[in-house]
Length: 339
Image (cartoon, rainbow, N blue to C red; front, top):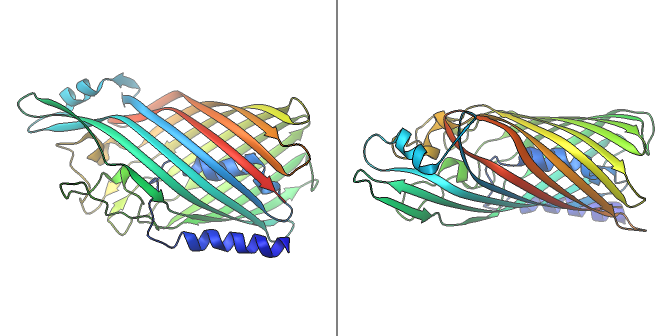
């Protein structure tokens, strides 16, 4: 019965994603997928479910590694007419993740996100008049991810000393790419509900158990392709190094180092580019390298398959191409139940 319920849950996730949906573009995909391998949901014998809430706050504008103010970004980029820059961005994502073991080595994973995006902007016209504005909120179901996880090696089925897992999957273009502003212009590509592309995904996870200390390493690669809207987000590579210590029977304390490298975007048809008037509509202002440090707390619910995890990510290094608004901090809260 549990297997039947798990199968129904897994395919329900897939069916939900077939609707016209909103997604958080490309932001946070590696956090959700790679994070699933460290949250415990993949340890389920029959099936596992997790709910991941992610909140990213973005205010700082960088030029390379230097911090600049919104007004300075405008002054250094405005040529003729008006010019706008983002002043604050809040991105929230709630992801439902289901894991279904097929056998002792193979697991199927599905992730369906619900997103809420908010952005404030500042513009300056040719007459030196400044105006602050807020973009209409974008929210709704997002692009899904389907992935197979295969254990290449483990020296024990429970509490392994060594475990090596690889993953292969795809991100489907279920999110809209034609959201428009009240004036009829397309919403910025980075804020569009979806990417419009089928993106292959690759994951490698290594676990080293030195109980009560557990070390993990994740490598995640997203091979982006051109979307049917003509826009192509840059390929993304990320890594996660995690150390967790069992402080008590029910509490684990840990720290992670998270890094990401993103290539530049390419607007093949020029539908979303407006570099003369908008900082975030300039494909040359895309691509970055970032490193975060993340303290982690995991709490196991006694006498159950449930657990909760809280992670707080703080950037320690950010280097961007051109002028970009970057993540000031990100918080992730995860609830897991395995059967």
